[in-house]
Length: 349
Image (cartoon, rainbow, N blue to C red):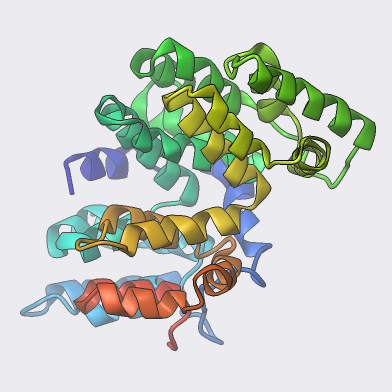
């Protein structure tokens, strides 16, 4: 964990009304979320008092922290943060930072933020790291292509409040020109979010994408415009049209372009647009394979999707790998970190 958490906690809270619609988005996805809430949710004051008690003992009561924060939705967590600040004149985020450590501390602090602030923080960290590899920029694509339009707008507003510049400005300052155009287009878009599909347009734009691939021009304006402006349902129809007409999935044909980092990011774009749950199932699998797990990636996937579609991610994981996602988490994590992730996956209260 870094001092950035303190910076965020001091500045978060601005323009809270701008975040309401994005926060409430998760509440409309209860059938796909794994987060579980108690039948009777205690008041924010009661939760704040219980957290203060958990902090003030001889040792921090991590189980109590998990039991409270791990079973509250985004709106409830915000109320707890506000109430804790009023009651004790200190930031709950700052207190968590001082009391907790390791992967568990990072995970629960990330969870405690409002979702738009959380993603703004993840985007900011990714842009600071992007010169070390294109993999860090996948976070920007996930936020742009695997979230609702309302959430993306709220992330951009939160980013401006937290870091005193726009997300687009930071992308322009940190990302190479060839990738910059695509990423700025993605984060600047406001896609129509209703299920509307025009098959004539899908066929036409599938042809345009094929022509860009055939001429090895993945940076063509057509590619960026189609992927950054069309609604999710329209794009899925376009990808299906491409496959039917040209015989291969579009991401497979992209391999012939040998376009390096641009190709890598475009494949992430298409995966997130086609099926976010399948993308994150594969993402989680990649984070736990090998001799050492990638805790940051595992944490990000579970924390950011627990209120959105983690139930569907779990189903995709079972379908793809013939094993349970929950078992992978149990086998590859331990202690309070494991207990917290399992809580977000729906472990009993």
